[in-house]
Length: 153
Ligand SMILES: [Zn+2]
Image 1 (tube, rainbow, N blue to C red):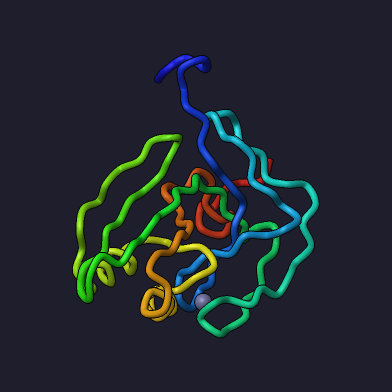
Image 2: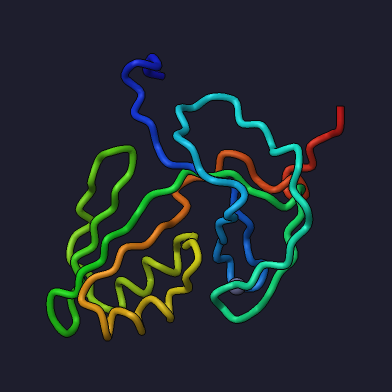
């Protein structure tokens, strides 16, 4: 554990997770702030909303379903027909995840929790754009209440 002066701040946000595809969505009313490892308090006011997911489905999220996580961003650049340069940014540090083939990138994206985009859509976009930035959940700080069986106090 570092002291607060040296702990890098990281991006975080409350998100909702689509039960169908596992992709998470941001909420405009719950903006992310810098997270430095402090106690995270579930927002007091959050009305149940129906969220349009990028997989085409809608899902309902209420306050108990909210999940708090730290966010890393991913920069993906197509370097040739079947090669992508992938770089992860987190807490001000960049990590080169190395060149990936389309299949490796597919497997990687499917093993992560992406935000507001699904892997197939991302690959489709990469056919048109040479480079894309996207967000993903790096770690879950507060899981949904339904998952954690937190006793009410
Ligand atoms: Zn979905």
